[in-house]
Image 1 (cartoon, one colour):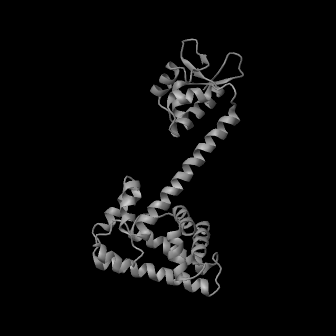
Image 2 (image 1 turned 180 degrees about the vertical axis):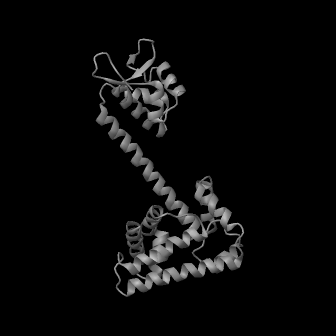
Image 3 (image 1 turned 60 degrees about the vertical axis):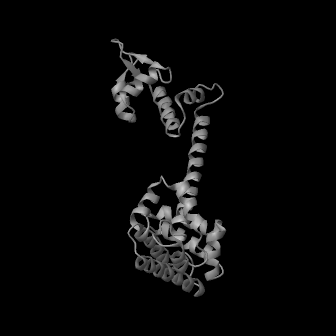
Amino acid sequence: MTETAAGTTTTWTVGQVAERSGVTVRTLHHYDEIGLLRPSRRSAAGYRLYTPDDLVRLQHVVVYRRLGFALEEVAVLLDDPEADVAAHLRRQRAEVMSRLDELTELVTAIDRALEAEVSGIQLTPEEQRELFGEGFKEEYQQEAQERWGDTEAWRQSQRRTAGYTKADWQAMKAEMDEVNARFVAALQAGEPADGERAMDVAEAHRQHISRWFYDCPPEMHACISDMYVSDPRFTKTYEDLAPGLAPYVRDAVHANTARS
């Protein structure tokens, strides 16, 4: 880090900027060559020197690149004369929130396919219906594989369930039924969804998913639980057990996530 002759503006060399930002020196050179990020100053020996304003521009470049924008698109966005820093940040925030919505939908679909309908079960359709009832639909597994087959959660579930025997699936189903019965008992006893009893059942529910299918951290569990009231198929499953159970489970899971 250096200062200009006037002693008022701090500048950084290309190596310092690379270390500070995580962007390689080669990439910074490329950004300079294509005019996307040209350093505002040069040293007496001709070396690139970046000012605080240059680092702000680089920050925007990095964010837009992470959001999937091409370099040409990033240049247009940054050089828009009508935009300012606040406008860029608002645009970036909107893009990030859009991605969060997509990820939430992804988690919802994965859980619906893997937990509720137990995607990847190595059983015949008749055995699946025997275990999980008439609510089982073969097309759910195909739908999930087509949409989410390249995700880590899907791959993890496939690896775990590939070797399950019918006895394993029976044990999993019995455990799932036991957790649901505990939810029903807590609801009918008037236990609040954010009380210790309901939260303990919610934690058992999360551990059930992690144990049998895929790693399910609390934040993911909360996203999953939202579909219990948004997806009619899940809502019906819980409401058939007890009226009001779907939102009760969702609220208990969110409370447990906050506790975690």
